[in-house]
Length: 312
Image (cartoon, rainbow, N blue to C red; front, side, top):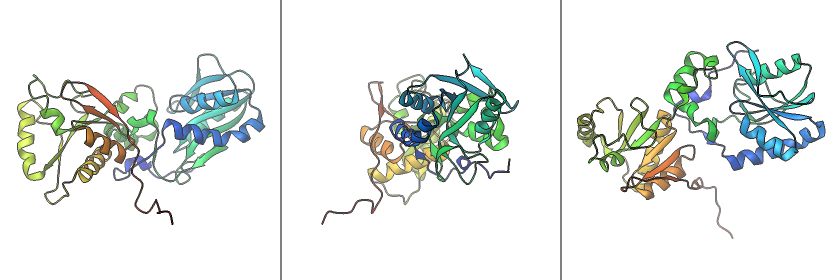
């Protein structure tokens, strides 16, 4: 297989295209006409990422489904539970960035004397060494909701050091949630022994505090965090001359969270939570209310400038 350039997710400047469940279902559906003509006996979903689109495909085609895993270090595929019935298998994964997993699973199944038709929701034509039989090309960085953790700093570090280790057993902890925290969400909890401990998914070393304060006020905020035992927690503040309107602050928070590789963002103000969710749909945004309840927020992204044209 040819050498591929570095995975695009290592570029922290890139904002991913978020492929949510509904959009993924439509994309899978658009690929199934040829699969229907090929008449597979069953669907084999590649764990972990391929299980959701494989379930979608199996449901649409009315076929049984089985799960298969691939250890890229050992270059070995293994069934999780009973093997897929029949000889003709539709092999499904969510995406092909390098193509190593899909190609390895296909080779293993051919070794079992199976016939394979491969399907990935998307593939990167600039990067993958294997192009699935059925797939949508996407040159932009993509992200599925079940793979938010691939952006976490620890997961990026694993991928940068050894691309094969990310999917290996024992390395999945690298994809654990990484939390972006609005500073005010911590300030609201100042009456607790530890103002951050109650926040969902918070773990020291897997969080960054994002403040709407300017850099000048950042030193005071950092000192406050230090008094609570979080002196080592990263703190990001806006530039002095940055716009201070609500939409600009939300875009700033979304950009910082994306650059850090956050999977979740905790916001103290409901309007800001909605604006952050709209600016970064790849994040799970949680409005953390003063009563201590967390509310997951979603919002439609605002259209890009010029995307809408007035009616004549």
